[in-house]
Every structure is written in C-alpha cells, then in structure tokens.
Length: 397
Image (cartoon, rainbow, N blue to C red; front, side, top):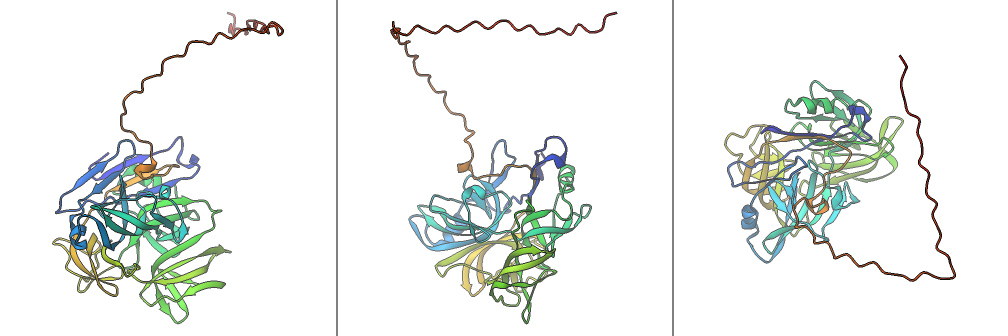
C-alpha cells in the first residue's frame, strides 16, 4: 500500500483461473483546500472521502428539517459508510429507488468506481438519496487493446486507464484481451475519451450492449465517438440534439452493433424541483466559457487547475443546462485495482466488523430422565470393529 495507490489483488493460482475476472479502477476523491474526513474500512482496501455538507447546506438554505428543493448529483462512488460521491456522504434508506442503466436494481449492486446520477433531499441535517441510477459509459466487446499504453477501444469508444505505474495493476489489466465483454465506468474528457474509474468483465452470454456520450448528429445519422449508431427496424428513437447527450442500447448481430433504443437527454436531466447540483467532470482546454459534461458553468477554475484535471462543481441551476457555481474544487485521483469475483457493497449490506461484547452462554439444561418403555426393548448398537489399514513398510534393503 502506498500513499498514492492502494492495491488489493485477489487471485488464486494463475490470473486466468478466475471465474469472472474483474478489473476495477477506483477514483477516490480528495478535495483540496477544504476540511476533510478520510474514512478507511478495514479489510477491503477502500479509501473513501467524506466531507462536511456545509457547502450544499448553504446552497440549499436549510440546515435542519425537510429540504424543499432537491440536489442533483453526477459523480463517482469513492467509498461507503453512506454512499460517498464528490466528497459528500449521501444517505440511503428503503425509500431510495435504484436503477442501473435504466433497469431496476438494488443497493447491493453499488460498487466503488461506478458513476451515478442521483437526486437527494435534505432531511434533518442529512442528504438522503431519493433516486439513484448507475450509469456505465459503455458496455460492449473490446475492439482493440494497448496494454503498454493502458488504453483500449470498446464499441468505438476510446478508454484510458490510469494505473499509476503499479506493476500488479498492470498485470491485472493484461488479463483482458480483444473480444472480451466489459462494462466501463467513467467520465469523458473534452475530446470524448472515457477515463475509466472502473472496468468490469462481463459474460459474453449477457448480450446487453450500451453506451452514453455526446451525439454528433448529421441528418438521420448519430455518431458517438468512432461508432455510427444504426437503429434496428423496431428501435425506439428519441432524436438527440447535435452536441447533446444520448443514451443508446442494443445488441451485437454478426459482429455489428444494432440499436434498440436511441434516447436524447439533457445535460442536466433533473426535475424542476431540483435547484442545486454537485457535478464531477474534467476541465476543458478553453475555460471561457467553462463547460463540464455539456453543462455551462458560471465560474472560474481554481488556481493551478489545467485542462484534463478532475474537478467537482457545486452550485445551483441558473438556466437551461447552466449552473452558477458556488464552489469549484480540483480533486485528485487515487487508483485502486481489484481483481475479484465478489462485489464491493454499501456498509449497510456488509457484515459488521466492529468488535461486539461476548455473548453470555445460556445455562445448560439438566438432562431429562425419560422412562423406558417395557414393551419396546431398547435397541443395541453393535460396536464397530477396528479397521486395520495396510502399513507402507517401504522397500526392503
């Protein structure tokens, strides 16, 4: 374990003997220039960053009681006690509705490194998640892979992995090959490259293929990265705007991606009651005007921030796809590589590892003396003979 990279690599025997190899790149946020509470749980190698809710509480205008407006969230899970995203601990309960790429899911499916879109409300001084959706950048077959350059192409999308020079992490990445089916969690750079925060290898029999990103629309043609989307005959299409966000899902037929769903979306896809936002993204080369994940941000980058740096924007919605920032914070990436069959679950779903007082054993009950029936003789159990086993006396001299 180092100060920059935390590594846990589960494997027994050779790398390729794993039933389902999983590569997870976890982006753990550490906010600079503000008070921090760094939370580490024993035994799982997860580093989470919990920050006070002062910025959001000030934006919401309430510190106690029920929040009138909601807070929209887009960012990467960096840890669990509650769900830690963008340096804030978001609480969940049985009322939290969970989806994964538009399909119903559960809290047990949450994993460190996943990107989520959510809405939270302030109740009794804490933010509780009303809705939460796990959003993968792309799920599909690996078209090409460059182990030395730590890049790969998935469904026409360029994916960059930051393995921080960790040898074990590099070795784990090398278990992936062209043709493997993977789900990539991450956010995009200005040029459309996905910076992976988690990569999960999937079964090739699963069949579901999807991607989300910025649409390049030319007539009826929709292009995302290097992939031109071809809707099937029965596809459900909600035409995206040129330069707008789009979600596409479908299947592979004879090596070609055929879309069943093409759905345009707003860069700020929240309801009218959502007033405040916490958005994670990457700083663009041109910060005038500043734009993050297709959202125009009224504010300036912090001192020392450069193009490609990971930042979190906190503020309130000031118009269509526009946010007035109350804080813009540069965050650093801590990479963790996990190669395991199990999942990383919220603390409420995991066994409690805290020490508990020893339980007092109940007193032993005295044996009950039951009378033997005179009519039914007590059966006798024959004694088993001692089994003799041949001794290996070895060769005689």
